[in-house]
Image (tube, rainbow, N blue to C red; front, side):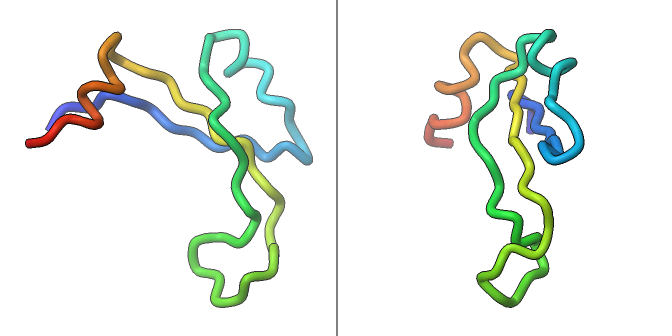
Length: 67
């Protein structure tokens, strides 16, 4: 299947994400800091900002369409 969107995570305790902002990446939110293997609901890791970069003008339509 084609790739419509790139995703990256920025550790906001160490970095500001300046290069992503300058290159027009879109900040879509922040992680909870749990980590994907966490069994508890407590934040164990630093929270990360989530940035995406669309590769297509119609990325929303492409991601939401029925197949």
